[in-house]
Figure (tube, rainbow, N blue to C red):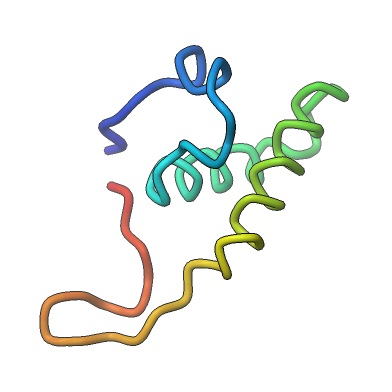
Length: 73
């Protein structure tokens, strides 16, 4: 389960100040609701995707302490 700041708090901050886990969680949540989003929701989702891309995505090499995928749960 996601433990972190909620969308109400995050919406008052620039996306560059969000953590990777926050971006990953809300990207997945909005991605699953895409058919039901209004124009404001679509805009927020696009901004999240843009921030993820600007950070170079979430791909990383696995090591002994971490897997190759970011886990936000």
